[in-house]
Amino acid sequence: MKQIDPDVILLSALADPVRLSFVRQLAESDGICACDFSECCSVSQPTISHHLKVLREAGVVTSVRQGTNVIYSLSPEFGRRWSAIGASLAGLVPIS
Amino acid sequence: MKQIDPDVILLSALADPVRLSFVRQLAESDGICACDFSECCSVSQPTISHHLKVLREAGVVTSVRQGTNVIYSLSPEFGRRWSAIGASLAGLVPIS
DNA sequence: TCAGTATATTGATTATTGTCAATATTTGCG
DNA sequence: CGCAAATATTGACAATAATCAATATACTGA
Image (cartoon, rainbow over all chains, first blue to last red):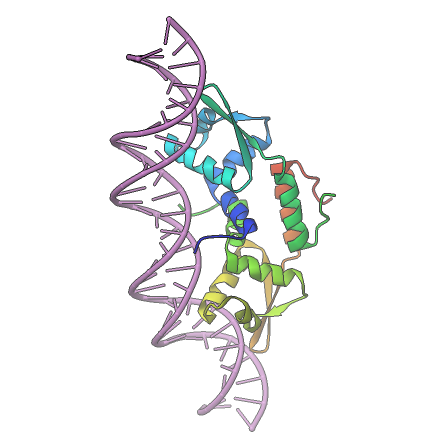
């Protein structure tokens, strides 16, 4: 069944050890070259590219080209979306 | 690959449309009988039981028996865990 | 204890997802 | 243009997860 609920898409994007590792790295920096993700998780270049695509389509990350490189960053909307889901699921206070 | 990261386990538990629907319902109430989840998602009783087990083992819900029924509730720790993950991934302010 | 109801488990099947090798595309530079 | 480097896509396969039918277990009340 293809997902339509954007929250399920977002959660699915994060629910993978490789992708969550990527996001954790991105949370610590202002932008990471796709080529630098290969250091962490012993997966192939196509697999890295695939995971980054999943994160991008879920709205977790954004990307910009710089020459032959592509720089990935956390999406500026991600924090707000996380907060909103937390508000609806656990009664947390959403970001205003 | 079996998951060990508890955050991946938590996110995986939520990253399913049926389970997220259950959690949304639980967020609106103080406790729901397992038998009452059958109304929403047109899945069989064993499937409901399976999904509730996934949520329980991930720490999202807790359960208590009341007679032949089992009442499920959101785990009291869930909000804090959500908040902590948001803090680490998106720089959100964690619950104190 | 027995019958009835609710929930859980087992086993099998199907659907989805992660992974890689091979290849294509994009970009910068002589 | 032609080459090299970085990233993306395709196609195939393996691993994982969702689902159900059948069955087992737990509890209540007669």
